[in-house]
Image (cartoon, rainbow, N blue to C red; front, top):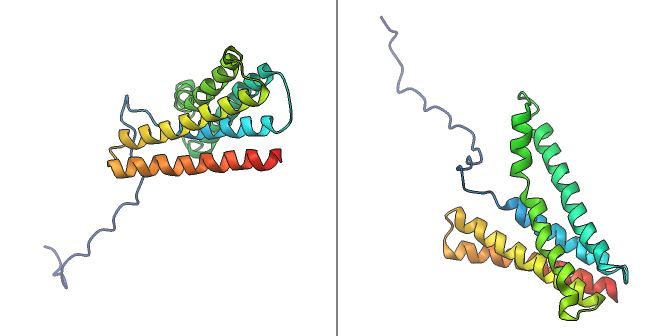
Length: 178
Protein backbone atom coordinates (compact mmCIF):
# COMPACT_ATOMS: atom_id res chain seq x y z
CA UNK A 1 0.00 0.00 0.00
CA UNK A 2 1.29 3.44 -0.87
CA UNK A 3 1.15 6.50 1.32
CA UNK A 4 -1.35 9.16 0.29
CA UNK A 5 0.25 12.16 -1.44
CA UNK A 6 -0.29 15.77 -0.59
CA UNK A 7 -0.54 16.82 -4.23
CA UNK A 8 1.00 16.27 -7.61
CA UNK A 9 4.57 15.06 -7.88
CA UNK A 10 7.08 17.84 -8.57
CA UNK A 11 8.30 17.96 -12.15
CA UNK A 12 11.78 16.54 -12.62
CA UNK A 13 14.53 19.08 -13.20
CA UNK A 14 15.54 19.38 -16.82
CA UNK A 15 18.86 17.84 -17.80
CA UNK A 16 21.66 20.34 -18.30
CA UNK A 17 22.13 21.42 -21.90
CA UNK A 18 24.92 19.74 -23.80
CA UNK A 19 26.40 20.52 -27.14
CA UNK A 20 24.73 18.42 -29.81
CA UNK A 21 26.62 15.34 -30.90
CA UNK A 22 28.13 15.54 -34.37
CA UNK A 23 26.48 13.48 -37.02
CA UNK A 24 28.82 11.08 -38.79
CA UNK A 25 29.94 12.55 -42.08
CA UNK A 26 28.94 16.09 -41.09
CA UNK A 27 32.14 17.91 -40.34
CA UNK A 28 32.68 20.44 -37.64
CA UNK A 29 34.11 23.46 -39.41
CA UNK A 30 34.98 25.48 -36.32
CA UNK A 31 38.59 24.29 -36.61
CA UNK A 32 38.73 25.49 -40.22
CA UNK A 33 37.31 28.89 -39.25
CA UNK A 34 39.77 29.14 -36.39
CA UNK A 35 42.65 27.89 -38.54
CA UNK A 36 41.88 30.44 -41.26
CA UNK A 37 41.89 33.29 -38.74
CA UNK A 38 45.11 31.90 -37.30
CA UNK A 39 46.65 31.80 -40.79
CA UNK A 40 45.58 35.40 -41.42
CA UNK A 41 47.19 36.41 -38.12
CA UNK A 42 50.42 34.62 -39.05
CA UNK A 43 50.51 36.41 -42.40
CA UNK A 44 49.92 39.76 -40.71
CA UNK A 45 52.62 39.14 -38.14
CA UNK A 46 55.13 37.94 -40.70
CA UNK A 47 54.22 40.65 -43.18
CA UNK A 48 55.02 43.41 -40.73
CA UNK A 49 58.56 42.17 -40.17
CA UNK A 50 59.80 43.36 -43.55
CA UNK A 51 61.01 41.39 -46.54
CA UNK A 52 61.71 37.70 -46.04
CA UNK A 53 61.75 34.69 -48.34
CA UNK A 54 58.24 33.54 -49.26
CA UNK A 55 59.20 29.96 -48.40
CA UNK A 56 59.63 31.14 -44.82
CA UNK A 57 56.04 32.39 -44.90
CA UNK A 58 54.89 29.02 -46.25
CA UNK A 59 56.85 27.18 -43.54
CA UNK A 60 55.54 29.56 -40.87
CA UNK A 61 51.93 29.07 -41.99
CA UNK A 62 52.14 25.29 -42.13
CA UNK A 63 54.29 24.98 -39.01
CA UNK A 64 51.99 27.21 -36.97
CA UNK A 65 48.98 25.22 -38.19
CA UNK A 66 50.60 21.97 -37.04
CA UNK A 67 51.59 23.40 -33.65
CA UNK A 68 48.11 24.80 -32.98
CA UNK A 69 46.56 21.52 -34.19
CA UNK A 70 48.73 19.62 -31.68
CA UNK A 71 47.78 22.08 -28.93
CA UNK A 72 44.09 21.59 -29.68
CA UNK A 73 44.46 17.82 -29.71
CA UNK A 74 46.26 17.94 -26.36
CA UNK A 75 43.70 20.32 -24.85
CA UNK A 76 40.81 18.16 -26.05
CA UNK A 77 42.35 14.93 -24.82
CA UNK A 78 43.39 16.19 -21.42
CA UNK A 79 40.79 18.87 -20.89
CA UNK A 80 37.53 17.16 -21.67
CA UNK A 81 38.45 13.50 -21.85
CA UNK A 82 40.76 13.25 -18.86
CA UNK A 83 38.06 11.53 -16.84
CA UNK A 84 37.69 8.88 -19.53
CA UNK A 85 40.06 6.15 -20.57
CA UNK A 86 42.45 7.32 -23.28
CA UNK A 87 43.18 4.88 -26.04
CA UNK A 88 45.02 5.19 -29.34
CA UNK A 89 41.62 5.16 -31.02
CA UNK A 90 40.52 8.20 -29.01
CA UNK A 91 43.82 9.97 -29.74
CA UNK A 92 43.50 9.25 -33.50
CA UNK A 93 39.87 10.32 -33.53
CA UNK A 94 40.66 13.57 -31.71
CA UNK A 95 43.59 14.29 -34.01
CA UNK A 96 41.32 13.73 -37.01
CA UNK A 97 38.64 16.03 -35.55
CA UNK A 98 41.17 18.86 -35.16
CA UNK A 99 42.73 18.40 -38.63
CA UNK A 100 40.80 21.34 -40.17
CA UNK A 101 43.14 23.69 -38.28
CA UNK A 102 46.03 22.41 -40.40
CA UNK A 103 43.96 22.25 -43.58
CA UNK A 104 43.02 25.91 -43.22
CA UNK A 105 46.71 26.90 -43.44
CA UNK A 106 47.18 25.16 -46.79
CA UNK A 107 45.35 27.59 -49.14
CA UNK A 108 47.23 30.71 -47.96
CA UNK A 109 50.50 28.74 -48.06
CA UNK A 110 49.77 27.67 -51.65
CA UNK A 111 48.88 31.28 -52.50
CA UNK A 112 52.28 32.39 -51.17
CA UNK A 113 53.97 29.68 -53.23
CA UNK A 114 52.29 30.57 -56.53
CA UNK A 115 52.21 34.37 -56.08
CA UNK A 116 55.47 34.93 -58.02
CA UNK A 117 53.79 33.35 -61.06
CA UNK A 118 51.58 36.44 -61.09
CA UNK A 119 54.57 38.77 -60.82
CA UNK A 120 53.86 39.70 -57.20
CA UNK A 121 56.58 41.05 -54.98
CA UNK A 122 56.89 40.64 -51.23
CA UNK A 123 53.92 42.82 -50.27
CA UNK A 124 51.79 41.28 -53.01
CA UNK A 125 52.59 37.80 -51.71
CA UNK A 126 51.61 38.83 -48.18
CA UNK A 127 48.37 40.46 -49.30
CA UNK A 128 47.41 37.51 -51.51
CA UNK A 129 48.01 35.02 -48.68
CA UNK A 130 46.04 37.24 -46.31
CA UNK A 131 43.08 37.57 -48.67
CA UNK A 132 43.05 33.81 -49.31
CA UNK A 133 43.05 33.13 -45.55
CA UNK A 134 40.21 35.59 -44.96
CA UNK A 135 38.12 34.25 -47.84
CA UNK A 136 38.61 30.80 -46.32
CA UNK A 137 37.55 32.05 -42.92
CA UNK A 138 34.33 33.61 -44.22
CA UNK A 139 33.66 30.63 -46.46
CA UNK A 140 34.14 28.04 -43.71
CA UNK A 141 31.95 30.03 -41.31
CA UNK A 142 29.19 30.18 -43.89
CA UNK A 143 29.51 26.46 -44.71
CA UNK A 144 29.46 25.63 -40.99
CA UNK A 145 26.25 27.61 -40.55
CA UNK A 146 24.67 25.97 -43.60
CA UNK A 147 25.65 22.46 -42.45
CA UNK A 148 24.17 23.23 -39.04
CA UNK A 149 20.84 23.96 -40.72
CA UNK A 150 20.96 27.72 -40.18
CA UNK A 151 18.64 30.02 -42.04
CA UNK A 152 20.03 32.21 -44.84
CA UNK A 153 19.96 35.13 -42.46
CA UNK A 154 22.07 33.24 -39.90
CA UNK A 155 24.47 32.08 -42.62
CA UNK A 156 24.89 35.69 -43.75
CA UNK A 157 25.40 36.75 -40.14
CA UNK A 158 28.08 34.08 -39.62
CA UNK A 159 29.84 35.25 -42.79
CA UNK A 160 29.52 38.92 -41.81
CA UNK A 161 30.91 38.36 -38.32
CA UNK A 162 33.87 36.48 -39.75
CA UNK A 163 34.37 39.17 -42.38
CA UNK A 164 34.43 41.73 -39.55
CA UNK A 165 37.06 39.67 -37.70
CA UNK A 166 39.06 39.49 -40.93
CA UNK A 167 38.81 43.26 -41.41
CA UNK A 168 40.17 43.67 -37.89
CA UNK A 169 43.18 41.56 -38.90
CA UNK A 170 43.67 43.70 -42.04
CA UNK A 171 43.44 46.89 -39.98
CA UNK A 172 46.03 45.48 -37.60
CA UNK A 173 48.33 44.78 -40.55
CA UNK A 174 47.90 48.29 -41.91
CA UNK A 175 48.43 49.87 -38.49
CA UNK A 176 51.58 47.86 -37.82
CA UNK A 177 53.12 48.75 -41.18
CA UNK A 178 52.82 52.51 -40.67
